[in-house]
Length: 422
Ligand code: AMP
Ligand code: GLY
Image (cartoon, rainbow, N blue to C red; front, side, top):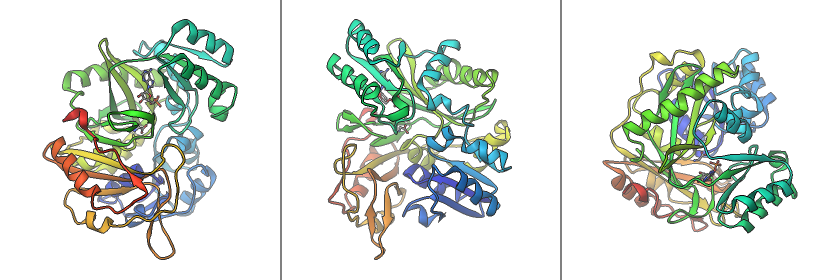
């Protein structure tokens, strides 16, 4: 088969790495890809937002199957356009991707289907929102309604922070259209867990458990990022909790979406807070987590591609996924300054040393090769160093041994990834 993966992050590098090992994959393309993906796939210079060019490329090259990584093209309707063009693809339609694309849609959906989530109210006027947070008090959570590249959420510890976040979104237009409406939410206290399932519209297969660290600083402090590291398995997601999450969240969501006319296909990723009163939904994502995918795919023993195709075909009931008993830890290296301002164009050396270590893999995100063939940082999150080990502690040791072989003075990483699990 001829396969196209859409995206350019370490998640897409991990997807390409897994798909290229499938006996079903003959030719693999990635749009736009990065310097690491180049080793697994032929990179095509089409950006993920350029839906028309992506569809044109697929038609011209007779692509058999498209795997869409990031949320923006999903919410923008890439799957719908590919379907109209007669091209099979992995991911939800634009209507179904509203589970990620609109926080207010998802909150109202949770109310309709009795899915436990934080209490909330929607606002499009800053004055009304400020009056509300004054009444409720801090801590409180302010969220832009639409997609904001992971930066639209403020967990406000003080009323001042809450008011600033409200004004930035509703008065200063910080998130553009995505922040024209906000959701103000009860602040949930507990441990977070990422729960991924594959869905074919009806059948559901849970993936192995994983957990990420969103804050930039050690001890899970500082501003949120796209994710600074992950581990799998996540000890908090035991068998009982997994069953509870399937019954209270996943099944009602898949059934509810079908009933409401937006059948969900693809991967559904629930971000949950495990509170003293049980799990509550923080958010749904209509895509694989990044960097969760890096640890999940290192542990997946089965062929990924048939499972992704089965999601599109409605034949997930025929698929069985086997997972390595070993643990995996992923440490993200980012450019100094991230998630704030950072420099691009700095030089990264030493990756050849890491590639010689068994059971360790470096997935690239913001990288490119300059005209001399040297590896250059070209984004905020740049490398995902992912190692397998007998247990989480062993995988963590191996991942940091690999990190220490990389020579990138303008990069940094957290040194405590997986601390909760050790
Ligand atoms: P989201 O973009 O919705 O995943 O939110 C980013 C992060 O903000 C989550 O991973 C949580 O750490 C935090 N967060 C979001 N909503 C809440 C909430 N209601 N209570 C506490 N923390 C939250
Ligand atoms: N790791 C968080 C996310 O992918 O949204």
